[in-house]
Image (cartoon, rainbow, N blue to C red; front, side, top):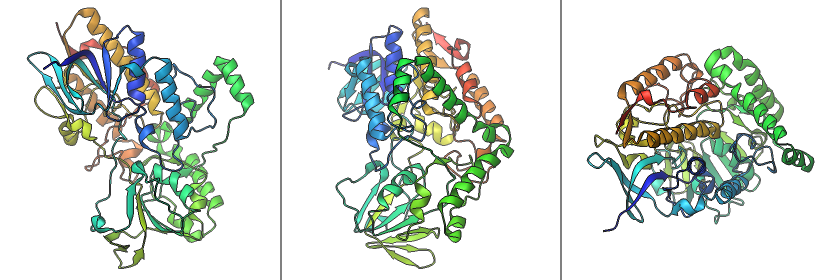
Length: 485
């Protein structure tokens, strides 16, 4: 049987995979392929199509530094515009020809004897010298564990799998969850539904978004003066990085941010009892703060009820609370986020026959969020401790791309066949992450979230400034690796 071989196989055609492809080609690597399970590129921006879907990072920062876009129509790009941006980059940079659509990775195993990766895809078998996971961390829906949910006779779907054929007009709709997705789609559906029940486990911190349409004059300026676009990007970077003052320096820096959020709550919600319900009881930054100007006013409408009582069970046409109260509903929408460990990680098997998912279940672990001990010739984007709580994911991804490409260039120069991060280097890195996390707001701010593990440890956020992370990933540190000729 003919098995296709490539030097580098990249899993995922989202921001990580497309950006990596651009930089690989710039570095002279042509023998690579991107394996994408869907029939289109875009990753999370292809998959999420719920009403109001948009970025919560300003567009000028949530884009590649090497492919600036002066023509964003709004301060915060909407899903369709971000997807079109990614497509344009992929076309302009000649990435599309390297993508294999419909090639979901079913199994990828390191072959110790041959020193290569054996990959089973939906399109057949292949091998690669190097494997890079760019699957992202918001790839698969997480559903709540509710008794009787499978008996519900109405329509039920997750925000990741929005049912656009279903008309919500006049319906009694239950929304479970108050995360970033729910904050975006609730204001969009609230005017159409008959009754909206929002099931809130804990109130999110909502800070002003101040989104607006960009003016043609400013778009012209950004097109004409590239330095102006760099300056705008730098300003946004500094503003977002400043959130690190709360999580990384001193929690007393929270007061201006919390004050801004409380003022917005006071201004947008007239009902004092509802204001109390919507006031978080933890330090801002402990969970992800959300930018929105529309969410709070939507909740202060006559057809909306915020429910804080826990759900006891779901019946065919209703939801029953723990106090016995029963609410009849026609549709249930889950705004409950994403699985912490994607299925793709269960299919990546390292040197010792252990999957990436098994390792992460034991303890979130990697080296610089870009390599994993026990996984030779393997790199990843946004691995554990490779994402920041106070910065654009694209900034961190670009840092990892630079590191991975430099690693591959170093291997090419040396003629090495195999490279694997040393266990002791990874252990030292993880010890540093644990040490720096002990005083972070994620662990001491009084909340539980996907920022933390069930046993209260850092789930994988980089507990330092993003510019410090970029400094240490600027060049491949071969001393931390076992490099085999």
